[in-house]
Structure formats: C-alpha cells, structure tokens
Image 1 (cartoon, rainbow, N blue to C red):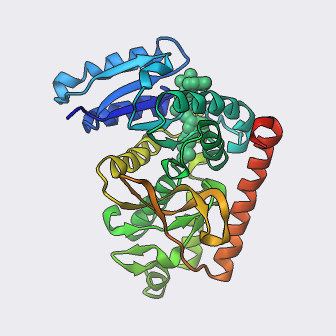
Image 2 (image 1 turned 180 degrees about the vertical axis):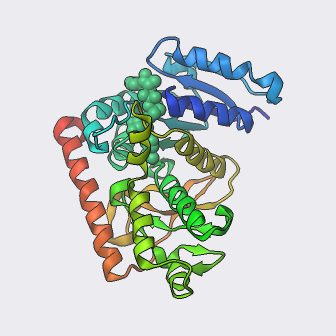
Length: 320
Ligand code: A3D
C-alpha cells in the first residue's frame, strides 16, 4: 500500500516543525509548499538528511508548485504571517485572508479529497474562509486551536497540582485564545473535576482563575518571549495529534474549530467545539448543555468570530 501523503502549506516555523514531526513519526511522504523559494526545499532536504540517524523511511519534497500536493490525504495550512509583539491575532486578518484564497484554490484544484487542518490566524475566521475558497465538504476542513489551548491549560494545571500532565484533562470551547471558554467542571485530574479539587484544598478559585487567564494569554506570552514570531512546537504537535486521529481512524475526542450546524444553537458556523476525528474527518460535534455563565462566555466568543467573518466578507466580495 502506498504511504499516505501529507501536504504542508507554509514551510515557516510551524510548517518546518510539522515536517520534522511527521517524518519522525513516519506518517507518510511529505510535501512542503511555500512561496518563498528555497525555504521548503532547504527544510525538506535538511530533514531528509536526519533520516539515516533517526531511521525513518519517508520522502520529503519542497516546492512552489501546487501540482505537487496532488492527491494529498492531509493538508496542514500554516501559510501567512504570524504575530509580532503588540499585535493581536485579528491584526493579521487582511493579509492572511488573501493567503487563504490562494491556498484554498490550490487545495480545491489539487487535493479535493484531503482532510484539511488550518492553523493560520485569526484561526476561526481563517478556517471559515479557507473552507469557502476550497469548496471542500465542511467535515473535511477544520482548525487547530482547542488542542493547543487545552494542552496549555493541562500543562499549567499539572504544574499547579504537581501531577503528571497525562492525568490532567481539560475541556475548552469557543474561539482561539482570548475568547477561549474553559469548562472547569469538565476538566479533571484522573476524573476528579476542578471544582472538587478546590473543595479538597488542592488549589483556590483565585489561583484557578489566574491559570485560566494565563492559558488565554498563552500565545501572547510566547510572542513576548520570542519577540520575532509566535509559538511553533506546541502548535505543530497539536495539529499532528489531529492528523494522526484522521489517518489512523482513532476517533479521538479533540476540541477544534469545526463547522457547527445545529449544536450549541448555531446554524452553520465555525467555532471551537469538542469533536470526534476519524476517517470521516470531523465525524461528530459533541453538544453539551452549558450553564448560564458558560453560555454567556460562549456567545461572546461566537460574536467575536462573527465580527471577523463579517470583516472577511467586506474585504473579499466573493465571500459575501
Ligand atoms: P512563519 O514562520 O512566518 O511561516 C509562515 C510561512 O507562510 C512563511 O514561510 C511564508 O513564506 C509562507 N507564506 C506566506 N504566504 C504564503 C502563500 N500565499 N502560500 C504559501 N506560503 C505562504 O509563521 P509560523 O509558521 O510561525 O505561523 C504560521 C501561522 O500560524 C501564523 O498565521 C500564526 O499566527 C499561526 N499560529 C496559529 C496558532 C494557533 O494556535 C491557531 C498558533 C501559532 C501560530
């Protein structure tokens, strides 16, 4: 059987990390696409040359030609520009929307059967636009954000409780980062919900609130430290987790920006929700009943995304 084909659109910091991880895990043959000549070719060759020491057998190719992504099983999109200190994700909208148009058309023409994971910011609006430009079925186009937001939350919680990150689960909803809605009552240590852990004296509400805020600001914290770009190791790892669930039909329950039609009172809208990812792409959106406070936070998050989608339609009349 032929190896799966993984197309990485954008060969910058996240794209290069994705290629390295996908090769090390032997997920399939890898195409690195970027408009910057030499960058995808150089990264593909560099990673291929790590193969003999690491012992992986996959092919890597860098390209500026969309024809090379033909027949890709998975496309992970990081093309565009990242934030600089002081910028919000939303400041990237105008420039990255144009990039999504080119990428969406490239995928439509060459890899219409792929499972597409968008990472480009502002995430929830860009995944919507990418779906519109590509015309792929909604269940085959999603965005990576919730896995990263919940991983950050789990990391901070594990540090707070001094337990293994593996035993901490987190449940997040809503848009990426600033408008993320953490469901603390569904976030646990080995099944014990966070509100119970407060009662047990493991932490306090104030400390938990500070952890939630640090999670929401997780991207900005890294931008502030790096000064010349944004996070890339954890974002790449999160997208790889989603790609593996699709390629191996694992049916993992993962939060991601998915097309929600019916659940959460939404009719056809991209926002962060818990989903099941398997061979059918986004196979299910898990709809839970929210408390009044959670619903209010979720609505705020949805409104923020709606504002960005409206701005996209104003910039590009073909989206209206
Ligand atoms: P960076 O290292 O700048 O890589 C982006 C690459 O895209 C560059 O190599 C560009 O040459 C390339 N590019 C630009 N335009 C095109 C085009 N039209 N076609 C193909 N390639 C193009 O950025 P990065 O890898 O650090 O980040 C990529 C994106 O991910 C940014 O928009 C970030 O804001 C975003 N990001 C999202 C998250 C989420 O959790 C959602 C986290 C971190 C970064």
